[in-house]
Length: 152
Image 1 (cartoon, rainbow, N blue to C red):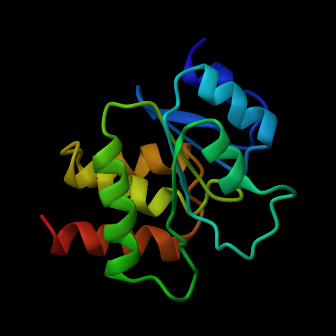
Image 2: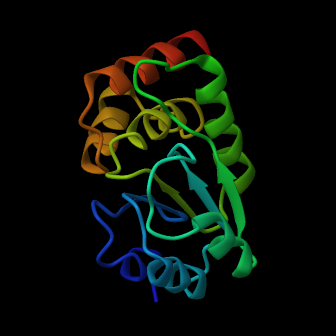
Protein backbone atom coordinates (compact mmCIF):
# COMPACT_ATOMS: atom_id res chain seq x y z
CA UNK A 1 0.00 0.00 0.00
CA UNK A 2 1.33 3.46 -0.88
CA UNK A 3 1.83 6.07 1.79
CA UNK A 4 -0.87 8.27 0.31
CA UNK A 5 -3.34 5.37 0.13
CA UNK A 6 -2.62 4.65 3.79
CA UNK A 7 -3.45 8.30 4.57
CA UNK A 8 -6.90 8.00 3.02
CA UNK A 9 -9.46 9.89 5.05
CA UNK A 10 -6.98 12.25 6.74
CA UNK A 11 -7.86 15.85 5.99
CA UNK A 12 -5.75 17.40 3.21
CA UNK A 13 -3.44 14.38 2.94
CA UNK A 14 -0.97 14.67 0.09
CA UNK A 15 2.43 13.33 -0.84
CA UNK A 16 4.64 16.12 -2.18
CA UNK A 17 7.69 13.83 -2.11
CA UNK A 18 7.73 10.03 -2.49
CA UNK A 19 8.74 9.50 1.16
CA UNK A 20 6.63 12.26 2.72
CA UNK A 21 2.94 12.59 3.56
CA UNK A 22 1.67 15.92 4.83
CA UNK A 23 -1.78 16.18 6.32
CA UNK A 24 -4.13 17.37 8.98
CA UNK A 25 -4.63 15.49 12.25
CA UNK A 26 -4.67 11.68 11.85
CA UNK A 27 -6.63 9.35 14.10
CA UNK A 28 -4.96 6.52 15.97
CA UNK A 29 -6.25 4.05 13.37
CA UNK A 30 -4.85 6.20 10.57
CA UNK A 31 -1.46 6.31 12.29
CA UNK A 32 -1.52 2.52 12.47
CA UNK A 33 -2.33 2.31 8.74
CA UNK A 34 0.54 4.68 7.96
CA UNK A 35 2.88 2.58 10.11
CA UNK A 36 1.84 -0.57 8.23
CA UNK A 37 2.56 1.30 4.98
CA UNK A 38 6.07 2.08 6.23
CA UNK A 39 5.97 5.38 8.11
CA UNK A 40 8.82 5.47 10.61
CA UNK A 41 8.73 9.13 11.66
CA UNK A 42 5.81 11.36 12.67
CA UNK A 43 6.47 15.10 12.90
CA UNK A 44 3.62 16.80 14.75
CA UNK A 45 3.44 20.59 14.41
CA UNK A 46 0.61 20.99 16.92
CA UNK A 47 1.10 22.36 20.42
CA UNK A 48 0.81 19.70 23.12
CA UNK A 49 -2.31 21.38 24.56
CA UNK A 50 -4.23 21.16 21.26
CA UNK A 51 -6.96 18.51 21.53
CA UNK A 52 -6.40 15.38 19.45
CA UNK A 53 -8.94 13.04 21.02
CA UNK A 54 -6.23 10.58 22.06
CA UNK A 55 -2.61 10.51 23.22
CA UNK A 56 -0.85 10.77 19.88
CA UNK A 57 2.69 10.59 21.25
CA UNK A 58 1.89 7.39 23.19
CA UNK A 59 0.18 5.86 20.15
CA UNK A 60 3.14 6.64 17.89
CA UNK A 61 5.65 5.34 20.44
CA UNK A 62 3.62 2.12 20.90
CA UNK A 63 3.94 1.54 17.15
CA UNK A 64 7.72 1.84 17.45
CA UNK A 65 7.70 5.00 15.33
CA UNK A 66 9.91 8.03 15.99
CA UNK A 67 7.79 10.98 17.21
CA UNK A 68 8.85 14.62 16.97
CA UNK A 69 6.67 17.37 18.40
CA UNK A 70 7.79 20.69 16.91
CA UNK A 71 4.99 23.19 17.52
CA UNK A 72 4.34 25.93 14.98
CA UNK A 73 2.38 28.81 16.51
CA UNK A 74 0.84 31.58 14.42
CA UNK A 75 2.10 34.96 15.54
CA UNK A 76 5.23 33.41 17.07
CA UNK A 77 7.08 32.10 14.03
CA UNK A 78 10.82 31.93 14.59
CA UNK A 79 13.97 30.70 12.93
CA UNK A 80 14.33 28.21 15.80
CA UNK A 81 10.90 26.69 15.11
CA UNK A 82 11.65 26.43 11.38
CA UNK A 83 15.10 24.96 12.00
CA UNK A 84 13.62 22.34 14.35
CA UNK A 85 11.14 21.12 11.74
CA UNK A 86 13.74 21.21 8.97
CA UNK A 87 16.17 19.19 11.12
CA UNK A 88 13.49 16.54 11.65
CA UNK A 89 12.71 16.41 7.91
CA UNK A 90 16.39 16.19 7.06
CA UNK A 91 16.94 13.39 9.58
CA UNK A 92 14.02 11.48 8.06
CA UNK A 93 14.90 12.19 4.42
CA UNK A 94 14.06 9.17 2.30
CA UNK A 95 12.38 7.35 5.19
CA UNK A 96 8.58 7.26 5.08
CA UNK A 97 7.44 10.21 7.19
CA UNK A 98 4.23 11.96 8.20
CA UNK A 99 4.34 15.74 8.72
CA UNK A 100 1.07 17.02 10.15
CA UNK A 101 -0.80 19.72 12.03
CA UNK A 102 -4.56 20.08 12.43
CA UNK A 103 -5.50 20.97 8.84
CA UNK A 104 -2.17 20.83 6.90
CA UNK A 105 -1.94 24.65 6.77
CA UNK A 106 1.00 24.84 9.22
CA UNK A 107 2.84 22.09 7.35
CA UNK A 108 3.07 24.39 4.32
CA UNK A 109 5.68 26.74 5.75
CA UNK A 110 8.32 24.16 6.65
CA UNK A 111 7.47 22.14 3.54
CA UNK A 112 8.01 25.18 1.32
CA UNK A 113 11.35 26.00 2.98
CA UNK A 114 12.45 22.34 2.75
CA UNK A 115 11.57 22.16 -0.94
CA UNK A 116 13.50 25.35 -1.67
CA UNK A 117 16.56 24.63 0.47
CA UNK A 118 16.93 20.86 0.29
CA UNK A 119 15.18 19.88 -2.94
CA UNK A 120 16.48 23.02 -4.74
CA UNK A 121 13.02 23.89 -6.09
CA UNK A 122 12.37 27.36 -7.41
CA UNK A 123 10.23 29.49 -5.09
CA UNK A 124 7.20 29.41 -7.41
CA UNK A 125 7.27 25.60 -7.77
CA UNK A 126 7.82 25.10 -4.03
CA UNK A 127 4.97 27.51 -3.22
CA UNK A 128 2.66 25.67 -5.62
CA UNK A 129 3.55 22.32 -4.03
CA UNK A 130 3.02 23.69 -0.51
CA UNK A 131 -0.34 25.17 -1.50
CA UNK A 132 -1.44 21.86 -3.04
CA UNK A 133 -0.45 20.26 0.27
CA UNK A 134 -2.60 22.54 2.43
CA UNK A 135 -0.82 25.89 2.84
CA UNK A 136 -3.43 28.67 3.08
CA UNK A 137 -1.77 31.27 5.30
CA UNK A 138 0.12 34.25 3.90
CA UNK A 139 1.91 34.43 7.28
CA UNK A 140 3.37 30.91 6.88
CA UNK A 141 4.20 31.57 3.22
CA UNK A 142 6.14 34.74 4.05
CA UNK A 143 7.87 33.06 7.00
CA UNK A 144 9.07 30.19 4.82
CA UNK A 145 10.22 32.24 1.84
CA UNK A 146 12.03 34.72 4.10
CA UNK A 147 13.73 31.87 5.99
CA UNK A 148 14.77 30.18 2.74
CA UNK A 149 16.12 33.41 1.27
CA UNK A 150 18.24 34.05 4.38
CA UNK A 151 19.51 30.45 4.64
CA UNK A 152 20.52 29.52 1.11
